[in-house]
Length: 571
Image 1 (cartoon, rainbow, N blue to C red):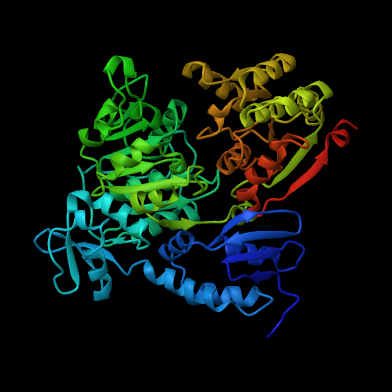
Image 2 (image 1 turned 135 degrees about the vertical axis):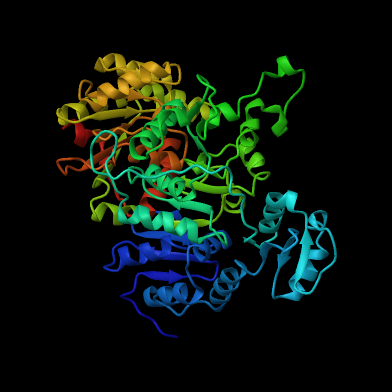
């Protein structure tokens, strides 16, 4: 058996790949693996990736081939590839597109396949039978078009991701043109990778294109990709995003960079309920429901969410899901009902902590385009970033309380709100006196104490939207140098001047939250300075193990955390 000791990878028969960190080919191999495998562990010297059916289907949808993946693995592997891994990669790559959902000349929906045995298997499957409307006809199986989304979910659950080529409704026409110079006066054009993302979206999903997810780093301009798709669609559009501040940022960008007048752009939030040709709504308002006491029963159906009717109140030809990794379960359910509308998902990471990545694939669409974060950094589109994990001891009294705590949640809270973290925050801010710093955390009492000690303003979920906007604007203008923020600032907040982020607590092992928080400081700086991300972690607690999981996605993107003891910072 051949052996190549200088290569960085070991591909194992359980579909894991071990990658040596201290190897000259590490970065190249990491970029290859990120395209079709998921990072599971990232200790100091050897990282573990896992090849899964879903990761391979996403790779297939974005243009990867079995030959290309296998050639890459062979190039970096110390040993010959296990035979079962080679077979599985070929098998799973071939499954994407083996089934196609189409419409006949009469408008009927059919599943089409060149594999007649597969159609017979599906016709006899108990999970698929409810979607069928007749027997196999040549190479097609008639299905219920009104259950298009539910059928796609059922098929992916049994291991057959369908390629949806049934087309889309065009929606009401609306001419949308991008400006060559923004309304604020600066030149405007899509960056090359943004244009490529728009083209990739329109190339996917059959004739006329129109369903799938674009994955770009925070600060890389996903909103601009959305505007490019809106301009090509030139149809009434519904944009869904996280929070009222995020919705208003979308509206500002639409008005600033397209020729659409403000009166044709509506805000549908807790504050206003405007339905216009382009309407920007929040996930929060869509998932609002009256309290059980008001309705008299527990509500589990889409009909119980009064604002879900927004999906059917406009002639939408396009629905954009910003921060698609946050899509709430009720929005998944309504999305299953509107598969005839074009759908664009925008996100910095396809990671979902609830494990519903397959629902994003089947209902929004597969990954159509992605650029590694480090590639964008090297090209100057996002800031260079240095990440640090600062480990601090629990004081003796808190250590005893931690040891005596019965509940895992209570132990996590005690570790997260470690009072010794305050001194580290103060020291870091003294070390960066000219920085524009965000102090980010999970627990409100902790954040309020930090804000009071620093004399800094604080933004939490209780802060009125108008006050949030005022403080964000003061931070952008340099009038506020330090801003203390809760998780409400994790998403869709554009703060280009922020160059220091200090994380004092977080949501357990959330990889997406870690990525979003680093993203707050990744907007490129006018002076070319680097961004600094500090995560303060209580040593020898569950918070330390959660931190390792939180860092996985960023490690996969090429970021490394420098582990620092608190004494080094204080010294």
